[in-house]
Image (cartoon, rainbow, N blue to C red; front, side, top):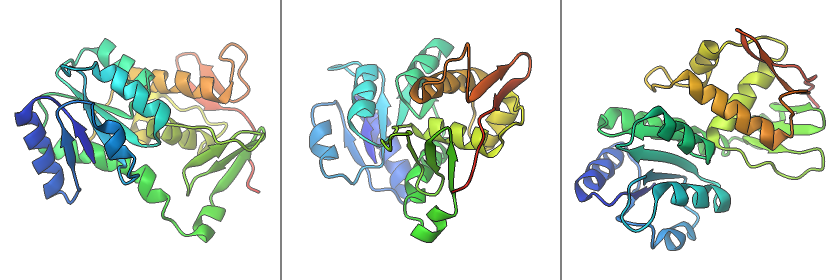
Amino acid sequence: MLVIDDDACVRDIIEASLAHAGFRVTALPDGKRISQILSGGDVAVAMVDLTLQDEDGLAITRRLRERYDIGIVIVSRRSEMTDRVIGLEIGADDYLPKPFAPRELVARVRSVMRRFDARSQPDDQRQRSRLTFLGFGLDLGGMTLRDPEGKPVVLTTGEFKLLETLVTHANRVLSRDQLLDLLYDRDTPAFDRSVDVKVGRLRRKLGDDPDNPRMIRTVRNGGYVFVAEVTAP
C-alpha cells in the first residue's frame, strides 16, 4: 500500500488503520518519491489526496494510471459530485471523501485489492473462466482483457468489474441500481452517476461507438445491456 497525503494526522490514521488490517504501508507527504517506491513492484494500491502542496492529486492520479498497473483510491475533502466524477474519469478505482471511518477505508481498499488477489488463481481455474466477444478475449480469473490483435487492454478495477458484470449478464438489461448492487460491496457507498462514467470510459477503451454500439447498448429509462455474442473457447 502506498499512501500520499500531506496531512501528517491523516497519514497516521490511514497507516494505522491499514496496518491493523494486515496491510504493509508506505506513507509519503508528497509525490517526489513515488517512482522510487513503485519501482520495487510490490505496491498493489495507492491512496492519493487531491490537495497536496507540491502537486495536484489529480495529476498524480493520471500519471499513476498511465504508468502503473495498480489500484488507485482518491482520498479528499473535496466531496462534490463533480470532483468524484473527474477522479473516476481520469482512472481512479474509488473515491473516499474525508472525514471517513477507518472501517470504510479498509473496505474500499479490500474491494480494489480483489483484482490483484484474482491473479494468484491457479491456471486451470483461469482457463475455465475465459470468454470471447467480437475477437476480444476476457480472462475472468486473471482479470485481463486482450483486443482482437492480442494486445492487452488496460482497465481499472472498476472498469473490469463493470465489463465482467455486463458480459456475464449478456442480453439482459441491467438498471443502474442493479449494476451498483453487482459492482459494489454493501458496505461501500456509491452513486449511480459512477456507472455512467465507467460505461463511458469502458466504451472508449473497447472502441464501442455509443451512437452505434456493437457491445454496450443504452436502454432508455432502463440501464445498459451487453448485446455482443459471448462464447467460451
